[in-house]
Length: 433
Image 1: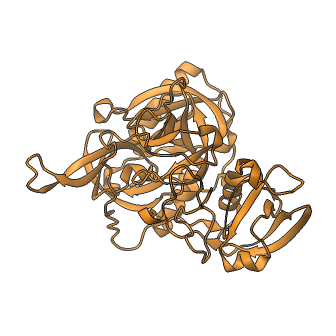
Image 2: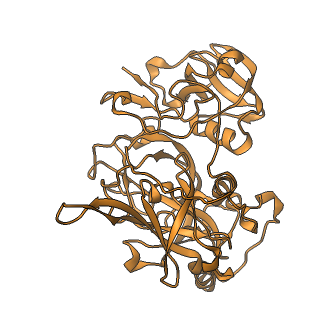
């Protein structure tokens, strides 16, 4: 879980410039005990044999299930929801090799503690990517106190999600959470966070609040490098989220999981601003990881920025004040479409594109690599529509020191390149001088 801080803590990290309102806001780790020591290491992706597809209702598309009307007494509902969800909440311990006290040998030690949610009888658990990032081994602590080693089935840094697996023999039906439908949420709906703030000594802690907003855009950051690799649309809640809540559930008053807790703002003067990845996105990513071992994302093959975030001196002469300004065209498909540097993308098929995060949401929610789409864009005062075949975003690779931009630059990351473009998926971007 990231903390969005005002610079008092670990101020050497920079925020993504596109999130203009978060000037001088940086992301720091919220894993218990990790701090800045969560170095990149080797994942143990010890999957033996083919991955078994989870079959329970949690991984069914939302459209396959009828909407439910929930009508309960709030106080009684909270207690009931907690009783229902708590057996599915686990502690997730990130184990890494580090020097012993004498400095004579490397030993396996706890590097951080987060939370997770069991969502399938086969033993699948969803948590945050940053909870298990760099882990040599991952240990799961079940509701009854048992410690079990888990296999990392797959991770997705772009959405900060990961799926783990423990033996199904350790799981009973009461240990399996029920996913809800985050598309039905409205501001003011009750929200309950459960997890392990301050570590396992405070396991299964419950905090209660409301859904403050359903469409907040926040940066996604590589915890090990501090590199912002994209943006994500998340739920905002005032239910207290603290270090150790990472990967734990946000649930509604009916005991359905509506989000996976991931971050909060701790800047001076801010209170009650926590963020949770919507469960509908979690369902999509978890399903793909369970089935294939990884998550794939379509890519337009361009680098750019929200038009609204482009400094005035670089603003193009277009008749709109929204869209994605194209800095660079990477993929052959994007080049063949006729899109050029300086164009402003305003639509994909029937979907309006208002900015960078909007482009991500439209691409990832409605399309897949290989799909042919119609891209609408402005070049000056002229409006064009061109066909384009979507590429695939390559696996995230942390940038090298030589690829980092100079201090003080207005940096634009590149989460939508791919399909053969140079630097695609690496978080590389460009700088305004």
